[in-house]
Length: 171
Image 1 (tube, rainbow, N blue to C red):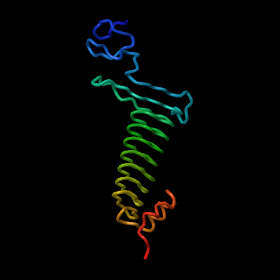
Image 2: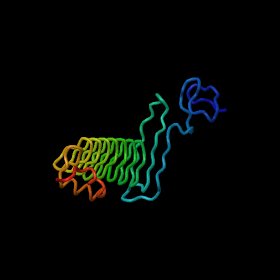
Image 3: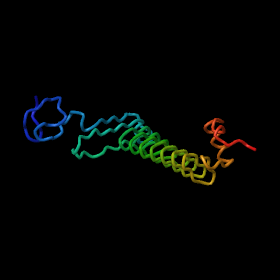
Image 4: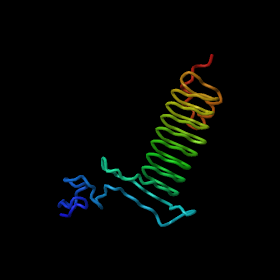
């Protein structure tokens, strides 16, 4: 048993929050996990993991993972994986990068996701110079309703010739 840092009542050392006042117990893991490698590249850690397992209503600040490889609620890096991911190659709920994969993916070069925006965009809704998806908008589109030859050629190279099965028969 340990005393609560807020109200002083005794509680189990395994508790995440005080049952009396709801204060988080320090060292319980509720504040999150952070790992930062000692190896750095250009001043950034090779790996930075910052996850914030916040309790409801505890109001702890969101940690930001910044590293060559960054994993976290918010991640910024050459390879970034997180709820919000920013950087080179990004994977996340909301993803912004050179190449992006996510629910909302915005990629300078390529984007894939529910809503994808990029030079090459693949998604449920895709917006790009080359776009492929259920609702695709752009200069060269491959969708249920439009089969631009340049888009068919590019996406065949990226995804394989299997997409040509979805083309209507040629007369």
